[in-house]
Every structure is written in C-alpha cells, then in structure tokens.
Image (cartoon, rainbow, N blue to C red):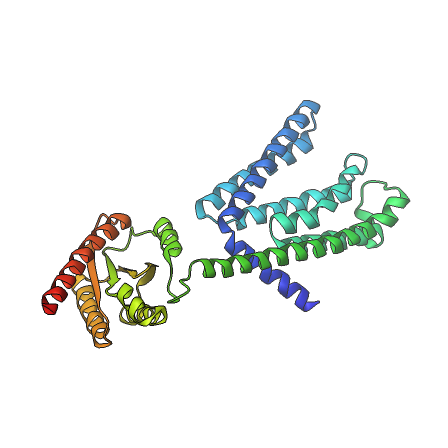
Length: 345
C-alpha cells in the first residue's frame, strides 16, 4: 500500500512538471467553467429569490475569480486548487447535512474523488475524499446524525456511505493507473528525444537537436554570445584512403576535443564533417585562445580543421551568427587548401 501511494505521488509530480504549461491551461479552463457555472446558478437563485443560495454561489464565483487572478500573476496553480478544496469542503458538507433539493444535492459528492484527483490535485483529492467518507459514515451511521437537518430515507442512510467508499476506491485505482501510464509515456518520450537528438557516430547533439535549441533558446540575459563553425578537413579523402571507420574515428576525436576544450558549450554535429559550438557569456579572447588550443591538439593527432568564429554582445540572431561563422570557416578552409597545394608543389 505504501508503494502504491509512493508511485502515485511520484508519477503525479513528474506529470505536473513535464506538462506544466498544459496543466496551467487545464486548471485555468476548469476554473473559468466553474465560475461561469456559479454565475449561472446565481442568476437562477436570483430569479427564484433564493437569497441563501444566491449568496453561496455568488461568493464562490468571486472567490474562484480572485484566486485565478492570484494564480495567473504568480503562474502557480496552488491558489486555485486550494480554493476548490475549501469551496467543495464547505458546500458539500452543507449539502450532506442540510439535504438540499430533497436530498439530491448530496449525490454530487460522488464526483469529488475522481474529478478532484484527476483534474486538480491528487493529494488534496485524497484528503477531501477521506474527509467526506468519514463525514458520511459519522452522520449516517454514527454520532453526528444529530447535525443532519434532512430526513434521509433509510435506504439512502444505509447504502450511500458504502457507495461512496466504493467510489473512492475505484477512483483512486483509476487515477493511479492513469498517472502511471502518463509517467511511462513521459519516460518513453524522453528516451525518444535522446535518441532523435543524438548523433549516432559521435554521441554529440545532432542537427535536430540544434533546430530545437534554435527555436527554444533565450539569449536575453546572456550579455555576449559566440558561435564557432568547424569543418574537419580531409574527411572524404580519409574515407577513400583508409575506410569509413577511420573517418568516424577522426570525427569522434574532434567531437571529444570540442567537449573537452569547451565543457560549458552547446556542441552539435550538424552532419558530415561540420560541427557547431554555441558559447554563452564567454569573452572573445577566451574563445579564440580555446580554438587555437583545440586546433593544435587536432593537428597533433594528425588531423586538420578549419573554423570560423562569430562573436556578438547584442543582436543575438543565432541563424545569422551561424551563417557568418560558416562564411569565415569557408575562408579558412579555402586558405588551408591553398597552403596544402603550395606545399605539394
């Protein structure tokens, strides 16, 4: 039983963190619908001149609206979750004790376990479900019967607490299964993202990872940004001369050296013999010195690279910076092959 609840709470926490934005929209929409429902009930109560119910429904709508504003300001769903918790606690306790609508209002309590745990908060849902379960047994079977202001039929008194007990158990099982399935789905999505974002040869991030990074990166507080475009010289010739395994070894070596030289950088293999480094908050002189050291180690291993560096302190348009670094790399690569041709002569 302990592992049951431990797994449930872990899965819910994982789902909340992973789908935080979607969850916020879900809670917001539920709250707006609840406010609209309370306002509609307020209009009906006003028409029927039910002053007590009017005060209840109108107060509930206002309370939810205020909590929604607070939650939206802080981007935290807890104020809304607590508001629902308190409202349901007060309203449904009144329904049970007063027997509104000839006792029919009491039946609404059966929606609390599944709906609250599924849509709002599992822990609060379990807590409020346990409260109503205890309240029903104590009022229909026990000493709190003196507080009941409605004459429930004997069949309702006998069966309804047991019905609610079954409702709680079934709801808890369903919620457990749903959150465990969602947690498993999240884990699968994470594994697929790792596979789809990882270059099979070097283990670095691939072009798909770079595209995702380009779409999601926020450089507003970076201050300075450097982009290094690297091309490995002679890959085609090495593949033809010694085979593709030798070419893969060269690419892996260059990739390892990039990570070792700039451990804080985003390192991507864009494909073929092209690598891209994105370095945040690093001075231009540090990047230049680091690339010179990297170039020296690569040459020491018998390989060769050409690279271009684009550095900016503002106007962080990653795509234009990559194009600029690529153009500089092409110039360096052309110079490399010119020097190589001169040595051959």
